[in-house]
Length: 258
Image 1 (cartoon, rainbow, N blue to C red):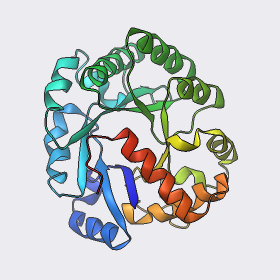
Image 2 (image 1 turned 60 degrees about the vertical axis):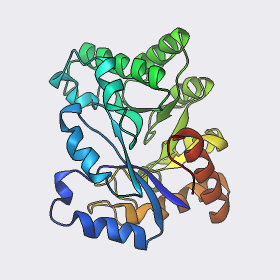
Image 3 (image 1 turned 30 degrees about the vertical axis):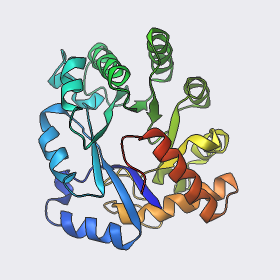
Image 4 (image 1 turned 120 degrees about the horizontal axis):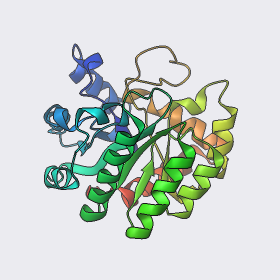
């Protein structure tokens, strides 16, 4: 089973042909997709896409959008996560590359998401960019307060943060970046990830894999990501598919396994 663990199908880039994109994904063998919330204020649009039986969703606010609601509470997230189609908390985290929200607000909003993940038992979908030290510190501090499950989504950060997150039991998702010619450092980290906790994603409409790089990404391109993961890890394609499927359902366990 091919599963795209991170799509943004509510994004405006799909407004003209959203259903056609979903149809192409199904034709390409994508059996399940998780539509990822980028801000709580836009959750209704995220949830609307998940009306389809093979699409699920998360609830949360991306670090770029943290300034929109700096006092976002864990309780708000917990209440929205009561919807049975919500299977994760996030996308949330720290992004110090663009700094589109102040760093202290990013951290505060991130901790609210951690608390919601801890309370609901749903996995935390973590975005991290150029924030390795603080991200590792927050994850370890929060884990000491009580365990929670986490997914380091589209992981492109350093080997040391990967080690710290893996020690807390984190899952990791691999995206089209793994296919980029200049991404040797990313591939090196992927080679050392815990093999039973790796899943795949497109992060569409962003990060289209080779040979589609430069185009709008879509879930139908996921097989290119899986093939690169198999190459990096020395797995056959069937083994890569079997491993990522098992890892996905172990993490997103609110979704019934077919």
